[in-house]
Length: 138
Image 1 (cartoon, one colour):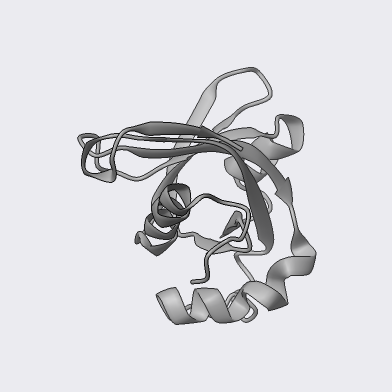
Image 2 (cartoon, one colour):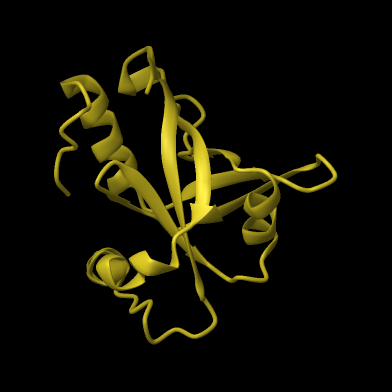
């Protein structure tokens, strides 16, 4: 994973940790305002977090109505939370394919069930515990 040029070193290090994590919790908002939270695999690429999901999933439907999302690692004592905006990015599928293949051994091109690519553009990062304490507004 490469550093993202516009991030300061401490933030870059945190985002690299986030990108390297096995999975994250992805929180989105349903059309009726109820929250939806579910774990998902992810990769970090050029300053964005990408997930691949099913187009008919709750997550995919939610971001088409409300783009604000939160992603977090599972360790509550050592929190690393990313807030941002999500959007479908199907054109990124081929570019992301080697990243998902390397990280998970998963070829997203040949998996017809997972047919939606979502990009999350971080707007805020919050950390505490062994990640240090801080908030970054991007």
